[in-house]
Image (tube, rainbow, N blue to C red; front, side, top):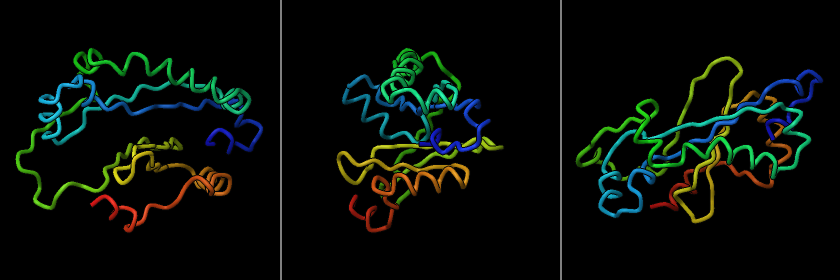
Length: 167
């Protein structure tokens, strides 16, 4: 959708970088319930953000399956336990015992202040319902307007009522 929002002729020759946030907590615990419980008591990020780039005209012209294959290709090395064990950059863990006292957060998010005209679309599984996703976007105004117009049937604003479904 972001690539499709490119309307000027020269925009099609520009590069679109696509990064995917990979949660390292699950990879480090390897399905072990004890390790998962320990990881749940940590506050901080255990993340990696592998990325790739494609020309905007390719993203507009090629089928979605081609884009998915490209994403799988650059994700391949970053979804392993070994990647997170070997990486000291992008992974930060802090222990918190007892929490902050106001209960479990309803929703967490990320912000990457990359500057310039770089933006991002961040999909995350919703904590409210199985199968729902929370997607937040840091994009140029024209890109947001395009997505709101073309995909209004897909996206709904996150409201406090929606977040209250979690508790």
